[in-house]
Amino acid sequence: DAKTTQPNSMESNEEEPVHLPCNHSTISGTDYIHWYRQLPSQGPEYVIHGLTSNVNNRMASLAIAEDRKSSTLILHRATLRDAAVYYCILKSGGYQKVTFGTGTKLQVIP
Amino acid sequence: DTGVSQDPRHKITKRGQNVTFRCDPISEHNRLYWYRQTLGQGPEFLTYFQNEAQLEKSRLLSDRFSAERPKGSFSTLEIQRTEQGDSAMYLCASSPLHVLAGVDTGELFFGEGSRLTVL
Image 1 (cartoon, rainbow over the protein chains, first blue to last red):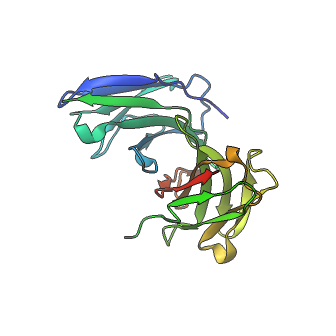
Image 2: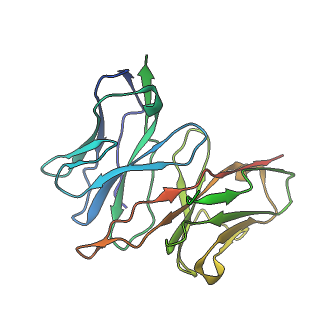
């Protein structure tokens, strides 16, 4: 299955925007890009997903490169509650074995 | 609460004992997944059910592990003859069958996990 590459950690100041990058150079045409986040001692939580076009929801925005080999999760105003590990994963239709990498640990500085 | 429920939340056992974890998915979700997560790592896929049928199993799922989902509702994950290397968080997730333009895009809804410590 196609893999994703993310930085191990990032820092952001509170109330500033955060751009979390993800590379997925071997993405296939049927792979959807999903983002999850995991707060300490909790299970992962769905954030957003997309295929080709940029996507917005109440939690975040997802910007997808034109060649789909990379994407960026955008948190418009980081809060302390956004401190978590963020996972970028690829999910293909009909194939349910989703692989999580080690994600990006986001630290939000007050 | 209508989220994914897992029980027990914590289990401490001695090496060689059997343990069983239970997962109650969101009621209208027909897909159920088990993952294992060790410290500092992302969740690793173990197995997947669609309704009562177990459709995929990871090579990580040795013969000491067995999962069932009778009647397509709750699921159990049993580990026999536990080893210290089995110590981990066991996560359950469920997903609706959400097909868009012929592609399943359903997001996963995770429970809070069952933490296993094998002494």
